[in-house]
Length: 296
Image 1: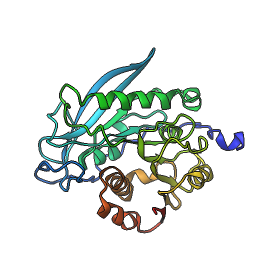
Image 2: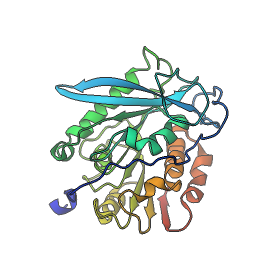
Image 3: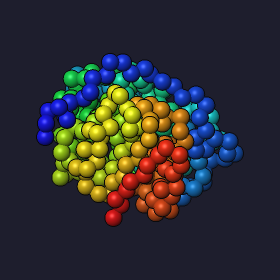
């Protein structure tokens, strides 16, 4: 593997962008979902709660916002410290990109939490060296460990599925962190992943058995599309690639095909929702997209 392919195309500047009032899963629905049997994907969206935790890994501080299905009316902004909804929910991490934050990434975080996932979202002051040397991927592994531990006591006790593995996602530098967890700094607990606008961080690790969905704009001038394609080629199936044709580094954030596809990927890979799997081609379909999948 060439060092050039492994290196991140330098981010001269990536503006933190907020997508305002995009319609996400759950908007405008009147009530939260009832309880369901473990392993069955919820069919009705939830309100979303959020709690802040000050965690560490050694001397490294990791401020993390944990978003989760909450009681109350679905739709609207996450409610701080809201009571958790009834149910047992899988964990699906999201790591933001350079200069951004979990709050600027609610267009995808809220969609996942509303659909029935506990979504830890660490807030990093991203350091390029730490991403490239694996420190940030290791930080996310610590976040996953700490999130799973919330099932034992406190306001999320009994609400987290600790037995099936975890999901990871992220955009840009966060996408690189996500791909790093599948490759050079592998976390064997990962069964589902969604690197967005990433570059290839290394060869797939034999210790990770994950279903992986890549999302990328093919005119991305910040993180090279060709590098993400190389990462996709190297990855074992089940895998898929959603290309936004003509898309930039962030243009797909306001396209509802993005959260719709990611949520159904998470529902299939974490809940075993085969109907969600079968919806994926339609989720991604439309003008200026290309869907590729090797699902087995």
